[in-house]
Structure formats: C-alpha cells, structure tokens
Image (cartoon, rainbow, N blue to C red):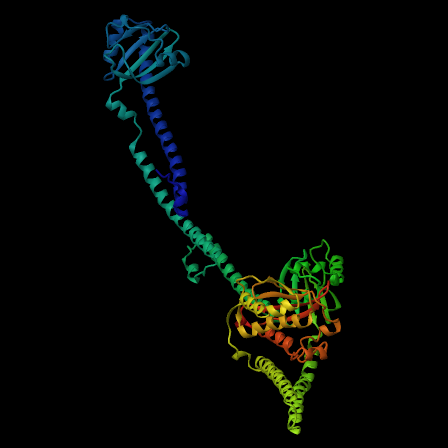
Length: 599
C-alpha cells in the first residue's frame, strides 16, 4: 500500500490541515480540561452538601455526648435525605454504625477505603462510583470527615445511579457551544488559508514557468488575492517582466555583437582575467595560426606564442589581484611574419577582462596592387601563346617547301600553345565568374574526403614519379555545403603546385586540425624546398610566378593559387601561406561548413 504524503496536496490545503490539526489539538485538550474541571466542581459541590450532613450528625452526637445505635437510627430516620446511607467508622477501620444494614458488626475493616484514608490524612475526603461490599455491590458516592474529639469518621453516601451520574456530568450545552465556536473558527481558518494558499500556489506556478523560461501571461496579475502576499507577488512578477524584457534586449544586442565580431575585418578575441576564452572570431584564429609556427587547437594557447610575448608581459603587469581598475589600459605592437604585417592591440577593461585585436595591414595594399597588375598580367600572359602560335604559323606560310618533319614540329608547338591559351582563358573565366556572379554558382553538400581521395588517385602517377608520399588526415565523413567544382579546384591546384614545385622525395600532408560552429580549419603542407619569404605575400596574385622561366616551362597558367584563394573566399574562408620551420611550404585556410551562410 502506498503511503500517503501531505506533500502531494496543494499548499493551501496543507496549510489549512496543519492549522486545523494544531487548533483541534488545543481545542480538544481545552474542552477535556474544562469538562473534567466542571465535573470535579459538581463532585466537590455534592461533597460539600454531604459534609454539611456529616457535621449535623456530629452536632447530634456532641449534644448527646455520645451515641447509641438506637439514637442514631432515630436521628437518621427523622433527618433522612432520600437514599442516603450513613456510616460511622473508627480510625482503625472498624464500622460502629450503618443505617442501611443492621449487621455492621460483621463488616470488614474500612481503613483501606479511599475516602477514609483521605479523611484521616486531610480531615475529609470523597470517592466516586465504588461498589459497596455490604450492600449487594451497589455503587455509591462517598463523603467522609474525621472528628478527633470522639475519634470517629462520619461517612455519608448516595447511590451512584443514573440520576446522580447525570447530575455530576458536565453541561452538554457547554460542549455544543465549544463545538460551534470551533466550527466557526475552522471556517475562518479555511478562508484565510485558502487566500494565502492561492497566492503561494500562483507564485509557485509563476516561479516554475520562469525557471523553464515559458511565457508569462500578464493576466496572472489579476488572479492574485487582494492581500499583502498577493501584492508582494504582483510586484515580484512585474520586476521579473522588466528583467525579462531587459534580458531579451541584451540578448539581441549580444547576438548583434557576436555577428559583428564574426563578420568583422579584424581578428577579435575577448578573454577573462584568468585568460579563458569568452568570444573569438575566425579571423583571430586564422591570424594567430599564421603568426605561430605551430597549429593552435585552442585560442587560449596564444599566450605561449613567442611573437606575442610583449602582450603577455603587458597583461601580467596590469592584471593584479584587485577586482577593478579605474580606467582601461591599452597596448599595441606590430608583428611582421611570413611576409605579412599585423597590428596587434590589447585593451584591459575595468573588470580585468581584456580584448586582443589583430589587423592585417597588408591586405588593402595587396588588393590595390593586384588590381593595378591584373590588366597588365592578362595582356602579357595572353600575348605569349598568341605570339608563339602566330610565329609558327607565319613560318609555315612563308616556307611552302618546309620539310614535313619541321612543319609537324611547328604545328605541335602551335597546338601546345593553343592548349595553354585554352587553359588560361578557362582559368580567367572561372575567376571572373567568382568575382562577378558568385550567386549564380550552384551549392550542394560535398564530401571533401572523397574529393581529396579522387584527386590523389588522379595524380598518383605524378606523385610516384616525384617520390612524394601523402598523409591524408581529413575525416572520412567531413562534408561542406558549397560548389563541388570550386572545392575540387582548391585541393587539385594545391596538389599540382606541390608536385610541380616542391621537389622530390618529400611528404605531402593534408589535415583538418580544428572546427567550430561555422568553420573547418585546414592545413595543406609539404616538406619540399619552400618559397623565399619575400614571395610568400604574392603567391596568390594572378599570374605571379616565383621562377617565371621554370613555371612557363612546366606549362602553368599562373592562376592556380589565385583560383584557390578565390574559391576559399567564395566559401567564406581565408587562406595564408607560410614556410614550415623545418622546411617546406604550408597553406592554412578555412571553409564555411555551409557556404549558403556566407556573408
């Protein structure tokens, strides 16, 4: 059987039952006490009447200077109270007279009787409802008094029958009056606890909804009882609603701030005074990984980067044990690393949290330079194959007797130059399409691991010829929503670039070393010859070549890395190149998980 618990009852009922239990406990005890007290009072009143009779009997004995059975029988018969029994007892307990039984000499000792003992001890005493051993077991109310002068105890008694019991019983009117008062008080208690319980229950419902962040109906304010607790509850709900509106406004502003940070053109990181990350945008992570010689899986690792040591020292000097500072403190520095120049600024706020911002101050200059050179480079790159084709064809036309072997050689060279021209125009078309109509490019879920695997199979012969081993650490189920062709171009051009220029007997490593809510972070590196640092900043320029003669000899268009950069930017990411500490070239870039969310 399940044990009942008051906890399952509403608060108002629990409160009412608790008050009722305490009140009824008190009321029952009080009524019983008063009932017993009234009964005792009536018993003492009857005892007093019988004691008066005992005194009259004693006065008769005193006037007679003693008594005989005949004298006592005559006196009792003439001064008889109906059904009264009179007994005279010696202190030893011996009965010397009893008006109801002539054989009193045969009575046993009465010394153990309660009223006799009280009379000998206190002068008088009484007992209720004891059966008489000498009178057929009839119950009596006994009242006795001890008179030292004659050393006798005079005891009078009335039969304890229904009429006497009714006489001694407490007044039933008092009990009914007490019950009516209790009922009225219970009604008052119920109304009071019901209103109080309603306020507490409503407040409890409000607290549960607030805890679950459920909407609060404004009409709830009208349902509270008009008492002090109801007014307090209404004030609490009004305060909560104001706080909730303020919280909602702050949340909206916070989302705006986060969106601003994520779309900002500078790297921003906000940290607690314990140097724990609060908020970091992807540019901050990208810049830090470009500055650092190793990949940082956590933004909190930036304080171990040697190039940022001045920032770390500034923080150590200014963030003390105090909880607040009077004003914000600033520190800025410049870092030149991997052919890029950065401005790093740190601001310590009054609550000891701080912000680190990183700006790439080479980007605008690079873009301006690229635009200036674009037209010139396109004209120059188109001129070379066209001039070659024109020269070979002109030679064939002007020499009709040219040997077939030479003519075939000139035609093959013209065909090769036309293929190079076709690839060049194709790459220019891809770049133009990404620049001018990115919204027209189709996007779909693309499995990058499968694309990389296909590329490695396609270039397997080239890898084998150059003795290049590949370490592919991209997860097998890594998927990006974007354009399959452009994503293919990213990894194919980077792979072709390594095969063409990195050298032989090297290792090619592809990995996704980090991810957050929006981005995947990739590293594409080789252990080859690397690139002189003065060229790093220009690798992604269109038609830029580190070794122009060698690049043309290998048949490159000079647009491969430019396509890589634009394809990465199309997918909402950024890309940088840097030399590996142990030798080789590394490309660090990011891709949005969903290019449809690209700003």
